[in-house]
Image 1 (tube, helix red, strand yellow):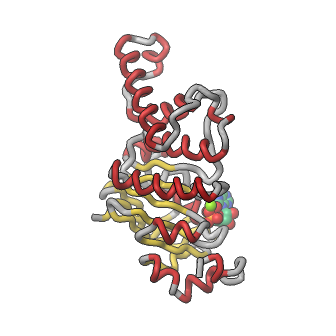
Image 2 (cartoon, rainbow, N blue to C red; image 1 turned 180 degrees about the vertical axis):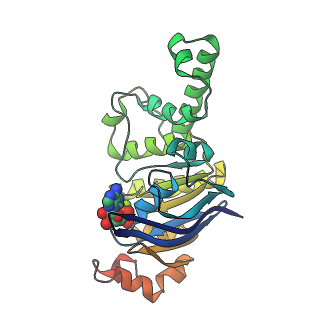
Image 3 (cartoon, rainbow, N blue to C red; image 1 turned 90 degrees about the horizontal axis):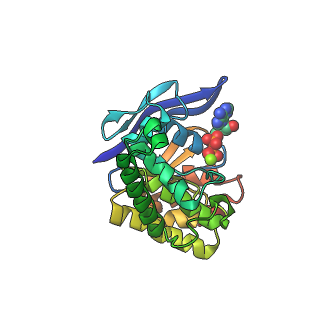
Length: 261
Ligand SMILES: Nc1ncnc2c1ncn2[C@@H]1O[C@H](COP(=O)(O)OP(=O)(O)O)[C@@H](O)[C@H]1O
Ligand SMILES: [Mg+2]
C-alpha cells in the first residue's frame, strides 16, 4: 500500500523553479532513498512534505489524507517526522528533554496545566520521560541523558535527533543526510538502526543521502531528483545502471565514482 503520495508538486522562489511537477511515492513499510546532485531540490521536497514550504501546485497525501495545507505541527501529528540536514537540537536542554519535546505533539497537557503542574499533568510528564528514555535506548544512547544535548559528540547528536523524531510516533520518518559527518563505524550503526526502525517499530523510512554506497545497501527503492525533476525511480541495481542517473552525476565530481560504480 502507498503511504506517501506526492503528485505534481511544483515549487518556485521568486521565479526560480525548485521543483517541477514532482511525482513520487513511498510504500508502507519501505526503506527508500531520495538522491541527486547538490541543489537538486531534495531538502526542498522534504520541506514541502513536512509543511515548511507551500508548493504552488500539487498534492501530498499521507495514507490518503491531504497534508499540503497543514501547518508543520499538524503534519507531525498526522505521522511524519524528520531530522534536519544540519543538526537542530535545543540548546540548554538536556538530551532527555530534547527527546521529550518530540512527544509533546501527542500529549494533552496545555500551558496552564504545565505551569500549575496538576497531578494528571505530572503523571503525563513521567510517561513522556519514560518514552523519551526508551527512544534514546533504542537509538543506542544509554548514558549522558542529563547533559546539555549540544555538548554531545556530533555522531551522538545525530542519534538524539533521530530519537526525538521517533518520540513523535511517526508512520514515516524522513532523514536528511543522516550519515553526513559520521565515521565509518557510526555509518555501520546507522544502517543497523534504520533497519531496526522499520523492522521493530514498523516505521517507513525515507532518506536523503550523499553516501551512495550506504544508499545502495540500505534502500529497497531509490528515486533520483535532478534540477527539480524526478528523473528515475527503481531498485538500487536499476538506478546504478540508469544512463540518465549517471549523466546527472557526471561533471558533478566523478559521476560514476560517486555512484559507487
Ligand atoms: N527558502 C528558499 N528560498 C529561495 N531558494 C531556495 C529556498 N530553499 C531552497 N531554495 C533553492 O532551491 C534549490 C534546491 O535546494 P535544496 O532543496 O536545498 O537542494 P538539495 O537538498 O537537493 O541540495 C537551490 O537552488 C536553493 O537555493
Ligand atoms: Mg539538502
